[in-house]
Length: 180
Ligand SMILES: CCCCCCCCCCCC(=O)SCCNC(=O)CCNC(=O)[C@H](O)C(C)(C)COP(=O)(O)OP(=O)(O)OC[C@H]1O[C@@H](n2cnc3c(N)ncnc32)[C@H](O)[C@@H]1OP(=O)(O)O
Image (cartoon, rainbow, N blue to C red):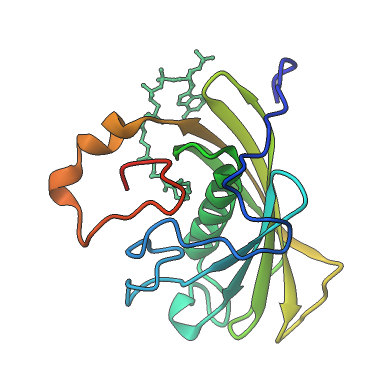
C-alpha cells in the first residue's frame, strides 16, 4: 500500500448506509438480473466507502468436490470491490486483484463479502475485502474464510467506447458514471 494514499469523499449519488445498491448493469455476470448464467450478487452500502455483498453458493459454482470454485470466489471479490468503488461516483475497471483462500467454502453456504476503498492515488483506487459464511454449512460470522486486495483504475467514457460494438444487451448506468 503506498504512503501517499488519499481519502476520497463519498459521492452524493451513493446510497445512504444500509441502502441497496443498484446493479451497475443488468447483463453483468456478478450482479445483473438479466444474465441467466450470472451470480446475481446483491449489495448494501456501508457507513463509508464500503459495501457488503451477498452470494449464495449454488451447486453450479462447484470447483473441488463440495466446495466453491476459486475463480467464482475471485469473481465475487472483483464484483464486491468494484461495487465499493461506486462510492466514488466514477467508473472503474479492475487492474489487479489477488485472493487468499483461507478455509473451504461449502456448496449451499451463503457468503457475505465486506469490501472497501482503502484510498486513492491519482486514478488508482486501492481496495480490500473479506468473506464470511453467514448461513448454511459451516456458518460462522466471526470467521474470515477468504480475503482479497485489488487495484482499480478510474476510467472515462472513452474506455468503453472502444468495445461498444461487442456489447450484449442495452447498457445502462444508474449513477451516470460511465457509458455502460
Ligand atoms: C458505474 C460504476 C461501475 C463501478 C462498478 C464496477 C463493478 C464491476 C466489477 C468488475 C470489474 C471488472 O471486471 S473490469 C474488467 C476487467 N478489467 C479490464 O478489462 C481492464 C483491462 N485493462 C485496461 O484497460 C488498462 O490496463 C487499465 C485501464 C486498467 C489501465 O490502463 P491505463 O488507463 O492506460 O493506465 P496506465 O497509464 O497504464 O496506469 C495508470 C496507473 O495505474 C498503474 N497500473 C495500471 N495497471 C496496473 C496493474 N495491473 N498493477 C499495478 N499498477 C497498475 C500504473 O502503474 C499507473 O500508475 P502511476 O503512474 O499513476 O503511479
